[in-house]
Amino acid sequence: MSFNRYKDIIEEGDTVILYINPQAMYAIQAQSVIENRKGEKIENVMQTKYGALKISSLFGKQFGSKVSLSNGWAHVLYPTPELWTQTLPHRTQIIYTPDISLIMFMLELKPGSIVVESGTGSGSLTHAMAFRVKPTGHIYTYDFHEQRADQAQKEFKSHGLSENVTSQCRDVCQNGFSDDVIGKADAVFLDLPHPHLVVPFAIKALKPSGGGRICTFSPCIEQVMRTCQTLLDHGFVQLKTVECLEKEYQVLNRTVTTFTTASRPPPPASGPQNITEEPGNEKKFLACIPSASPRGHTGYLTTATFLMENRPQPEEVEIEDACEK
Image (cartoon, rainbow, N blue to C red; front, side, top):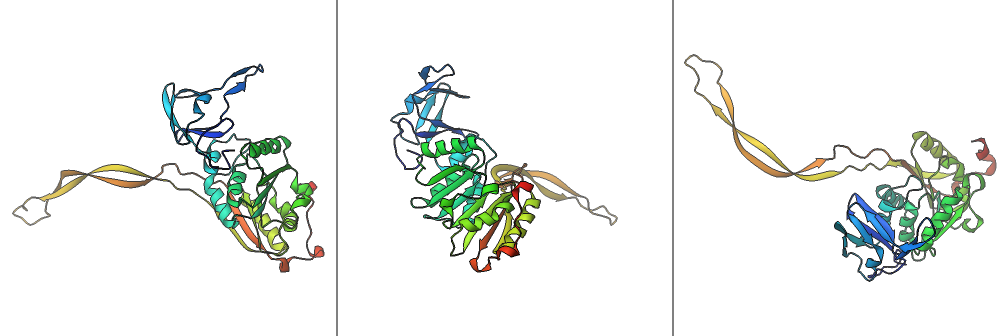
């Protein structure tokens, strides 16, 4: 599968990124024949704002090639987690590359890491983490919505990530993580409405040697406050909450008019000198201009480290029942 193991030539069944411009990118499945709504087999032709593209014409072309559309042209790119994040079908709100890169850095992920994730959503973060931990690492990802979990599992298989990703339908707030991850995880990531309810289950998933990392993604500060208190109550240390805000600068040509200062002779009686400014030459230069509409808040990232020696005794911590929520 082209998504997992790099290849030069496009073949039937590969995932391909059709790049027209930064605002027009599409993830397509390289299939020459598809079924229409009536169940009939028809030729696979993709319609874009710059014309049609016969998918069969991609077979045998190299990734990165320029291809002709009926009213323009585009490039066919090899799929990467970053390009997939920009083109994937949205089943939920997704985490984008700026937050993804910070999450993986704060979780200290590396090849061979074992990660437990909940929830899967559209699989944006899961794809990126799978590439970070391969070839020997593994991602165990959970989502309470059965259709989303099934669709994500199909995508992981289609993209050749089944060796590194296991997707399951499970409500971890109620039932915790499955038994096959207990004591195996190097890191836990939670993108849930009530992450504080899953903290006790995350402790069970982390390796008993201690030092495991946890990261939560929460859009509201009230969620962060409750999660931080729960983490402290359960023996986590090095708590840190950050917000990743992207500020874009554009490099643009600018032209300004310079002025020269001219003075007239003073009148016979002493008085203020009459100073005038006369237009001079135009000066052109490159300038870095901040975006007029910067991107706003996405979510708060809270990370912490679990130390086994700080683990409280069962009678010291009262675990809330998820049913009360």
